[in-house]
Length: 364
Image 1 (cartoon, one colour):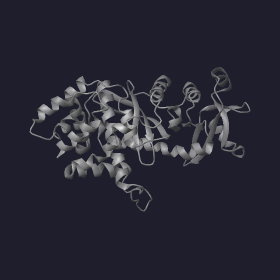
Image 2 (cartoon, one colour):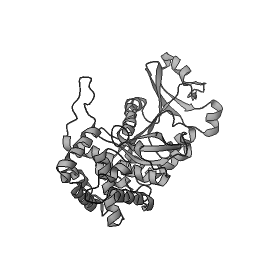
Image 3 (spheres, one colour):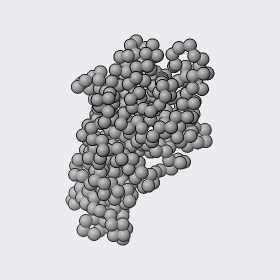
């Protein structure tokens, strides 16, 4: 049954990908196989191939695909946006996910789109070792996004406490990218009226409000780096403060920042709740980047299938008000079921990628 799905998806993607017929079929087999098998491990994917071919032959075919296929760095980005049906503007979230393969550290820096229905990686890069990203890495990732889409497509960029820095925020401001980034309470700031203190100390002055303007760093640092005035918004949580710096309205930043958690859910979808990305034995950075592209297509497929299945409805909720199943799991389970019963129906969502819609709205 999967043979029909692979053939149909190959025909849909052929106008967009400059690959031979055999390589394109292998790509489609991987995307469909990782959903069907709930794994990205090549050994498991080899068992999903329909037909009479030996599993060992299929495994070698998959190995050759990752060995010899060289696609552009962001080849999947236009496909993802068209499959999701994104238009105008959307939220972006920036974060890292990492794990170990033997003694090798796999460390992805990911920029993902976050909407009510979708949470899908758009662009990513691999960080050497297990450490955090630096300013140059973040700027390079953002420039790749801006090479494909104007800054007006970014409703708000959300990031956690790891992603701070004068140079980074200066870059975002110069490129008209709205952002809301969480910061630590012990970060030193220079207030609008020139006081040099930590954010936590400033927030103890309750009468002066929990939304104010300040520059990051000490008075000397702020003057030396020409750091712009930013809005600071804070609210108390259990035992700590949620403090966000932003270049938009403070209230908007605080209300929207909670959606940053969607990228954590995305990593769960890619890993244990869905495709088990950590099952891979690939360690070469180029091969890992290609694998992430295929994982992103599978995640987008699941989200699109859920949206098509439910229409304007939302997944049912439990008594604690959370979804009984997420949008991802709703679409993911639906696809896996249909692949066994009606494979052509399972890939119906891919019909959104067609020659008439080749260039997504908002693309430069």
